[in-house]
Length: 219
Image (cartoon, one colour):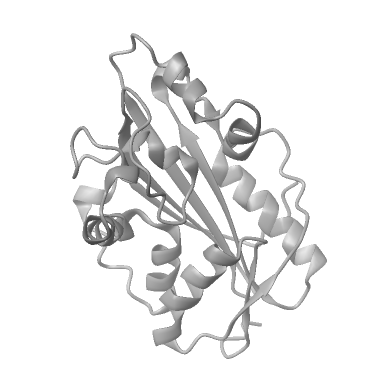
């Protein structure tokens, strides 16, 4: 049975991500709490599948709770999707300048941040997937990561042509955050929770995938 007034637990070790979701859900009066868990993420390349698996593991580890999990990937079509969901491993071993070297001579500079959020409401699983498409710059640029990943040195958004996100000033960064809220899995969860899903216009249909699935016990 759904526990609509019970706390929601975001299972993440990243306090910044937890705070971001907490701020999004605060106007709804949601009691969001943080839990940590060492997930077996496997070696799959599909973040939707990974999110489903994480949710399945979370339900076993924390029964009778409303739960949120997430997974993110960075996909570069010219590199056959590399690094995909293995961004952390990439930054720890290969680092972002390595991507610039691999992209040397490539005309297809597209890069896609893919976000998957899994939510268990006490009865059913809900998976929200969103993609943000940008580009790889020709060399690392900028010095302001805004508290985010080092990939911002080499990644740009179409709203700021030819520039990396690390080059944006604070005002431009806030503009960027407003833009990407439309392709943010956490914002999609917020809109679901407040019952506003009709905002998903046909123009975004190819970018967003919202999946409401029955109770899953995938591994």
